[in-house]
Image (cartoon, rainbow, N blue to C red):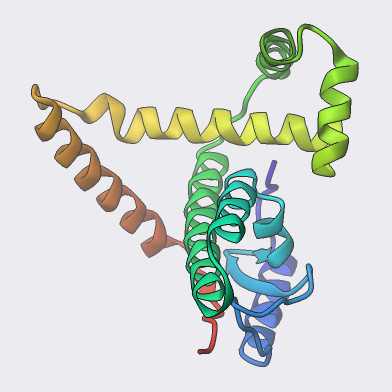
Length: 200
């Protein structure tokens, strides 16, 4: 979990922000894994964060299977930009959860881990570890994904789901979209977000 930001963290962040403007980067090229794409408060988001995102991996695999040449490069760039935007939003939400003093009990995470192992891996830790190895993921990575998901689900429930009043599916969808847009706008307003936009 993120720790409270200190003056030292803020100084490091200001130095990071200053360095972002000096970094050449193209999302349709192949940057190094530690290339910084954005920063939210004191935390950078790197290209490896995009590479390791499971939804992004799936979307890129599908793209590579369907497209070639310039069209593929354009589609990949769009996928990575979409993932970057989502990761920024997730970081904003997690930071807000932390600043409000929120925490996820270890007992909940332990139970959730076991539920997933039972449901998806036949109760076998070895099968989970084999799958994680294919993905280049450690058990801690797996656990952190569950923590992240729990926080995002909780914050979405508190800030969107519990405020839905519409009766019809269409009205609910419109209200949900409006609530989400307003919520994320409020988080961006009180946070410091620096994005290194790709060139060309």
